Length: 325
Image (cartoon, rainbow, N blue to C red; front, side, top):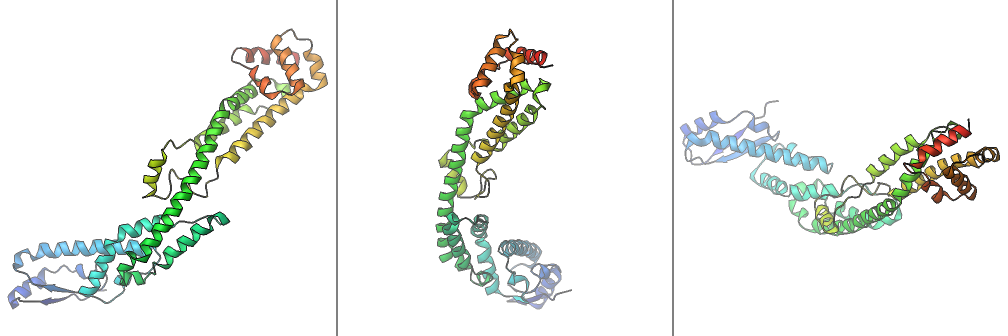
């Protein structure tokens, strides 16, 4: 729908006014989807086209910024609904647009929080921020962003950062413990790979477990960022490396994986520990197999897996395959 564009000229003769009206872009009025009134006092009408183009671009940027704020906070943008933008309302729009970076930062941190009681205080502080940012009233009173709302946000941000850093530290601590156990776990998977070569000991499992192990290591790689750097990042962004409060801490996954590897080994060893199998294995002359059967009888898992090395594993599997045909 075509919207009329009103111009009120000051200190302009009729000839200049007529020329000015001809230079008005038809699209300028629809930038904010409303009627606009420009107070023009051109000293030189030859430059008015460039001035109007700059003004049109300014309104377009203003409109885009206000729409972004409106979308972020789920509030209708009153400047696109009103039928007239006067100097006062335009000034308010510009004042709110100038606060867009502050509002964008607030919005980034106003994220969903877990329902657990330990997040109650953080949720309370988050609600205070929203209560002090009463949209759409903020569109009419941009100064609200600078007063109580900003202080409420800083209180929330301080608590959020503190809790998030503790969360990250717990994650990094669990990864450190895991890394200390990782060599032993890799040895267990290596042992399983060797025993998988013996068909009588059950279906192969090591290949899948090795792939899972690589996935666990990739998902839970340490951040390698110092606390002081994390604090700097948290001034701007609420989440680091995609880790949120909803991201499970890795220690449970580490424990579950370790338990499954141990259970897989135990299934293999149970078959060797069987009396009929042991009776066959007593006929071996291989020292490694003799040691293996002895340790399996003692159920000493840590010592059992150490028998399997790059040198001994092929010999053990070959001997077991031969004896357990």
